[in-house]
Amino acid sequence: MMRPAGKMKAVVLRDKGKLVIEEWDIPPCGEDEVLVAMRRVGVCGSDVHFWKDGRIGTAVIKFPRILGHETAGVVAEVGKGVTSVKVGERVVIEPGLFCGKCRYCVNGRYNLCVESKFMGSPSLEGAFREYVAHPAHLTYRIPEGLSYEAAVLAEPLNLALYT
Image (cartoon, rainbow, N blue to C red):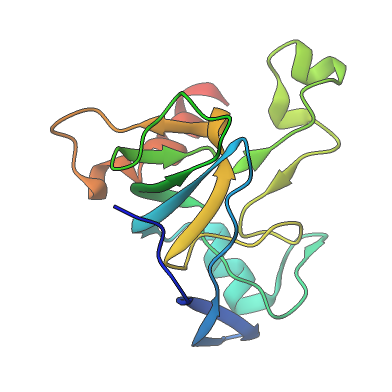
């Protein structure tokens, strides 16, 4: 698989209850990132709340916003510094970005990081699009024989097991 040229399609939340398919630029792949071609993206309860209400509690999104964070895809491009995955490998991505330096991150509790950003939330575009550029260290291979449909459940399964 080679880096695609041109634009990609994205499902964009333009307002409460209003999803549209638009063409967006394919994101650049940074030095320590991978460009993942999405094959499946699950619909989470949080996506439904943001679509219906534009918010979850105090977390209010600004429009337009691309939702989605339960992902499975294939690596389309790797940055110059990436050795952990290769083009063509099937992967899932950890949707939470974190600082890696605070006391929570250092102690393995990065879900509590005050600097965290989460895909498809007020702070970061989501995965309901054809391509996502994401940090390579938060990208994990899908085991052989596991379908994309099953792989998108990795993120909610992780929540069920570790919260």
